[in-house]
Image (cartoon, rainbow, N blue to C red; front, side, top):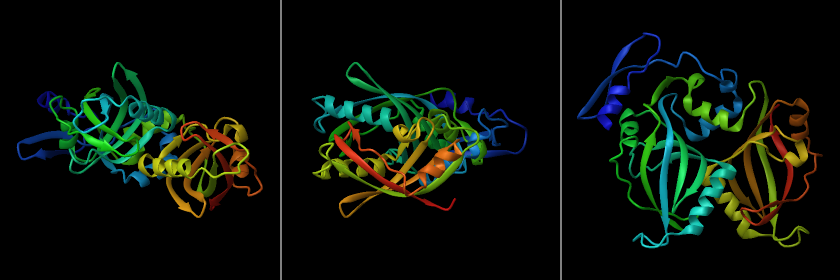
Length: 311
């Protein structure tokens, strides 16, 4: 219950300052608010890629974070009488392929919006099961999220043409509280799922790509290109092994913005790797990229050279 969760919110860390935290007019709790004194990934959490993630999500420096699972069901229409199996499968596939970062999750329920990271999905019966890590500076929102009685109105997802009913969220323990990004449980979960190296070279920039209907690259696939652009602008994209056919394993990418420019897509990226030669190769305008097939959007892609900003 929400009362049990409040009781658990006694953050066990070094004794500093006790302050009152109000989540609503009827709810006040006292908690020790200090940074987590240790982290399993201290070097990794200083990654420039994670700084980019925090910046693009407008992640709060001081925040509560909780992980867990929840179920959702998708329907053909708003009256929720017929399950949309195709839309549900597409959403599951998208999260398993690209993960998902949300800068304002369920703002219709949580007025301040929540920062969400969804990294795994499985079909369980006629529902989807999702694994999440969610963060917010507002303790009241976190208590509401973990309350099994919280109701979620059906919402429409234009990307998958699906009406969704979210079931209550199951949180694994009480939310943790951290001051500063150095101990952020949210960024730590992103780092873990990407398997980010503790020491790495990181670069940001832009690049162009063009999608085709067939491998011979004669007819542009405008629908596939638009779908990929929309997906990145909606959900961002995390790639734990970007273009392994060119760089081998270990090049990890975060793509956070896309625009249509003429007959090409322009992407904004932050990419990291422990290999100095790979980052030099990435930023070399003479590097060539074979055409690759994207089964999600049924599109053959030709990546153009990457333009790196700075060193």
